[in-house]
Image (cartoon, rainbow, N blue to C red; front, side, top):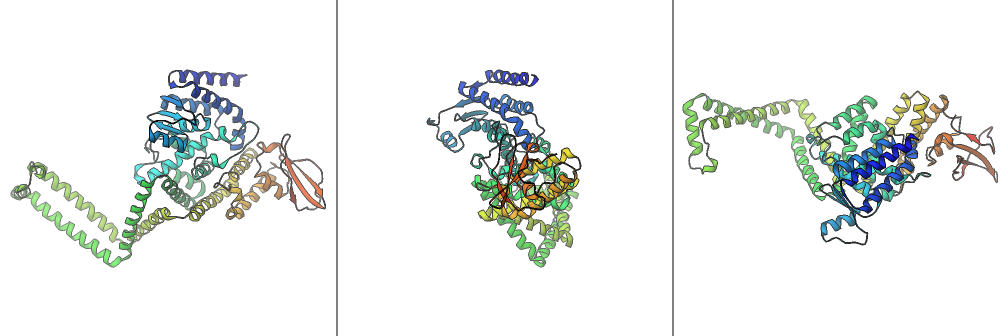
Length: 508
């Protein structure tokens, strides 16, 4: 009864918010339809995804995004054309258009909700100190967030769970976002997405969290792969960004070439240091004698136009002191590089940058291998999660999370479960998880082949699963089912004391 009142209250709250906005009637109907479908689907979504967010919290965020960031929502027919060519092109590409908190959308609920989520994004959620990565990482995480927010509405309908890969706006962003969510939990990602202009360094926080949970080596490798994938993801959508990466790669290659010619580079650094020291002495002589300052003042102002004149002795002194500080910084940098261990460190850092920027030239097969390597690192971390879990309830959650991981789309053709390169590592995770679940009396001693299918089933409530072994033409077959759904049977190799035609519950 309480839930009914809460849901009624949310619908009334939506109506009140929309009454204050410039929202067309059709758009209002679409938004009411979204809330209804969320109400129907959320229970299954919450169970399958293992999320702590309640339906009320999820809906409240939608309402908050509309209230804060949506001034006008307009829908147009799919056959309708708008006069503005830029708007029309955007509509044809994305099915929606956003500008200045105004949304134009075709009358498609999924696209309207995605537009609302995208419009609520902060401009930048990665600290500026990460340079060109600030943009690509921000966009990767925010796009993943947008797709994540649509999942309950897109993939669940109250009786089934179906993921249509073509409906995902960006499979790479979704894959990375969901993998991070399993590694660090959704609370971390929620905090990151709410950051404004990268004020808080969430990349550093992520590194620290990963290190605390999985160790420094895995943490560094995971971050490296996320950064590379973010660049790959961004250059596919943004030609200007692609050219910026190419320019940076060219610059880094030049620096590496210089560092590799150690003798010549050291000589150049040493000479630069000598020149800087000499110039500092000259500046100090000028500053320490009033007559020299006046001479320098007259020299700089002689024969130059008004725009380039030094307007006072005081300004000249400030300029000289600024130059002196700049030279001192250059000498400090030279001293740093003249230390052999520092020289080697900086060279290795440049090589890392080169490896990161080289993804701009990756072919599709190389990009796929990059994603595979990232998921291999995830599985190494997942083993550690299995080793740490003790309580039955937490083991059940881990089984659900692993099932969710296995069903994540990897590309337009495959899910994680279909990636052969991950097969050995996946089997290792399955065996560790099954062994623990049996030992802790979470599941009965189920044949391993059956549990492998459990990890890939889309029957939502795993605790209600049964299996039955039957024989046909001297072959053994298994079927997994609950009270409502039966999956296709599959062949199994029999073992001693195999129970035939007996309905056996999998979870205790």
